[in-house]
Length: 252
Image 1 (cartoon, one colour):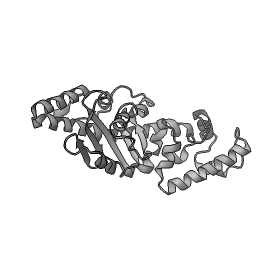
Image 2 (cartoon, helix red, strand yellow):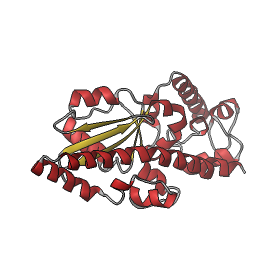
Image 3 (cartoon, one colour):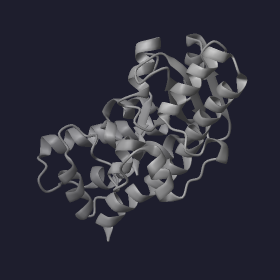
Image 4 (cartoon, rainbow, N blue to C red):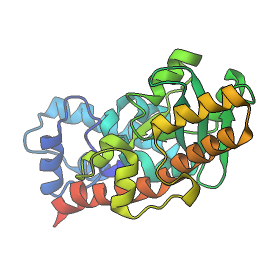
């Protein structure tokens, strides 16, 4: 999908991008190989050609930072298939809505790494872990997870591509919280954490601190782990439907 995208070109809006697709310009190569394109002047065409050639080079060199810089944040999902081998799904828990971070869960699609305050949640370890990835996927991370992490640890994100599934899902009519969307799509959770929500996660942390009983922290970790693991099938479903609705639909 990324090589069919023109939305990251300066002053290129969604309507102009769709117009290109509907006129049979389906890829960067199609655009560059056209001598003239209706509605785009010769100077703009020359500039766009150079920009797309550079984009192709950056993609060939696996440079996610170029696309993190130019791709609109709500369209970052388009980069998913190109960098999905270097992706992590991330979710945090806090001591209150904007309180201290108690747990950070990271899932690379195969294994989870759960960092817990007082055990292994340290800034150097978190930075080392995040450096492994080019895409970070969250649910509502633009409004919550990322700002809270920056407040607690500073700006430790190295120009990652960030896909916020809350915004991506809304483009295909999936609205509401993560748990609601999971139920709509039939994504299940393990029985022991079924029905637990963010407010319960705060309570579990408070009970762990008050009693020292491991059952509370273990349940909180399990809840967070389910959050990050379930983001993967949601990402795959959302990408496929977005691509079909936005690009493939214009090609019919």
